Image 1 (cartoon, helix red, strand yellow):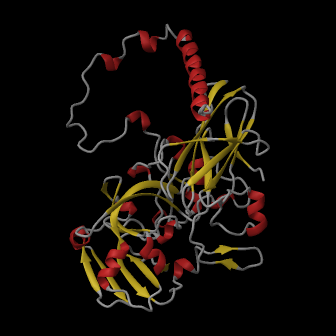
Image 2 (cartoon, helix red, strand yellow):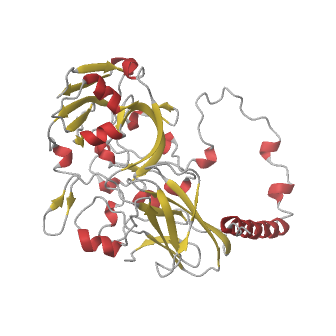
Image 3 (spheres, helix red, strand yellow):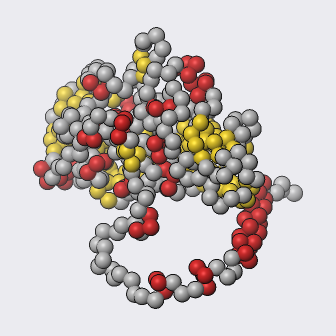
Length: 417
């Protein structure tokens, strides 16, 4: 006889418990005027279909916005804002909430005048219009994009009180674009070529060296995200997508790709985006984003407000090396772990949504999550990462995050090794 499906059994038990809690809540609130009384929106006609030609969120969601931390950078045009992870569900980030990182502000480009050049070690230097690019076969891929400095302020200890600020330099969307290899094949890459250098059309002329092997593997030249054209702050009309690798390599407002036989060692891969170690040496070419996770709720910006009882932990996990195989959750700062439930699609190099449901008795908690990816990499503790890397870097911090839940439901960022 086949053994019972443990997943189905646990889910059945969970649902029956949740239904019981809901029934108690219904009985306790049967005379709530919010359901028994006439509300304003029951009595008057609402706006028509022409009120908002481009849809916007409800006015009651006005607090769900990108936010910045003014003291982090000297000027808004070379700065960053953060995705409100604590307010989002699923794995897809709405276009208007994807974090921004700029080196010279947002370039406003007329697509009719925009061009993409491919030159260097190629048989035929080419210049493409946007119409030319859209005539190539296109693909739709879901990927996360994470800034290498995401969680960077936590290297030396807990600082920023909210997952929007500690982990909010990440988003995940469906990109539509042309595989870069098609454009390179059209130009004819010479046999001695080993690298490419994408260049942006903004005032900073952002450039990064990318190995040709990666360019030919899974890089896209994207013109759309989540079904519509790229937003200006995300590189409209064209950007390069470098799946699983640090976000500064995903050059926006893409205007040129040079093919060469060695890396260029430009500003953004020498003065920045190297990982300073103790002793003064730095790791370079640390492209892949390591396995990582964070509990988004409860968290400092999403405290527990319902009191004791059935509570849902929600979070995100991702890895630049593949998919997420497992996420564990701890309620006591890493002493004990329970396997969380991953829900929704599991795309390569994309965000994964996880949940853990439990009955909270009102006592303090130390919430942690620990992700394991499809290559077997396990998210490290802060102490383990610091033992290898020190505390001088601001890049590639993928350590376990801890939230302290107080007995009243308030949550703060705390330090646990």
